[in-house]
Amino acid sequence: MSGHRTGLYVPGDRADRFVSAEGSGADLVVFDLEDAVAPDRKRAARDAVVEWLNGPGRGTAAAQVRVNAGDDEDLRAVAGLPVDVGIRLPKVETAADVDHAAALAPGRPVIALLESARGVLNALPIADHPAVTALALGESDLRSEIGGGERMLDHARLTVLFAARAAGLPAPMGSVYPAIRDEEGLRADTRRMAELGLFGRMAVHPAQLPIIAAVFAPSAAERAWAEEVLAALEAGGVSTLASGEMVDPAMRGRAVRILRAADAGS
Image (tube, rainbow, N blue to C red; front, side, top):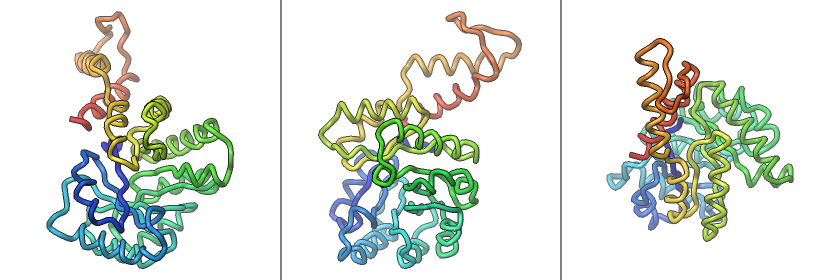
């Protein structure tokens, strides 16, 4: 589990929004140099993000920089940032793409964005790369390449999820929901992601954060169940819960994930 229940993109050329983004309550803020920035504003965006993340005003939220694919100057700029700032690397299709980024910005966590059929099919070797700390899916780009609807996306989500977990990485965060005013659509789509096993979701507007956080927050009943399971397993032997459900060691992983998810929002 990533620990990031909510993430928020902020355009790199909108320095006036940096403070509000970091004060939005998002667990993670992604400073975007790619899609949210016009081509003639990209250098200014890079300079603004570097100045902010190296400056004294930076907030306490986790930070990542989404660089432009194939832009070595972006990677060199990120290399000069504090070591906890991650690289959100778009359009990753092979482990060699990560090699290149890691060579220019060594020792930095890489979040690999898989946005093509080749990237999804290579999810496991990408996840196994030592620099990669998380996978993410670029759903808009994937849908543009492949077509299809929810079933196609669910297949890609599960493929990336299985690759991440097989490599010992956290469950991926969900991609953004672009319809900012469609709260019910966001809630339903986020629940779908949670049921598939993803944890957390990126947002394009702070108004989306409370809905995302609520979906991924375990209920009081789930937390009580998890605590009861772990207590029973600690006692050892054959045991049952108050509900009559038998306790099995295979239940430990689910119980731990529930409690970690609860702690992530506390």
